[in-house]
Image (cartoon, rainbow, N blue to C red; front, side, top):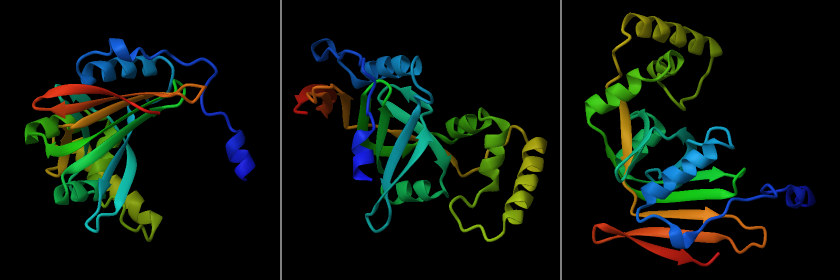
Length: 213
């Protein structure tokens, strides 16, 4: 099996250039450039791994969808009663990891997390597709499902509720805002001399630092 794992290619033959010296002053500018570029080549460029820690300090991670980048915040959304919502309530810090293997690029950021205003969270929810709103109203995310029929029944009830109340959002639906203290951009290179640029917040501004591979 190890031979198989080592034999799989990691990146395409042609990789984009990363001119670190010309990188913009803020990570937001560079991230949006990379995100738009990734969207021209890969599926779901806005998919991101959200990492949190549970009450015992054990890491937990799952893939979610980036909702927005506004100013210095990166936004994701979920129910405050979901495992990730509970973990963020107990320890309001998180890491986000974007990986675009088709471009040989990765972006990592971490920092404190806050909840957006309720009206912002409600607007986030009502903008979701109908099936996604139904899923949120079903609730009980990550709980043990003893009988698949229970899911069918809960989904039918949620679909009826959403149909009758199209503009109503669950009180638990929350848009979470990650305000990174560090953002790192990683560009793969076939000679293994990968380029890494870290933005670190320092006294209210961003400091750029090139890192060893």
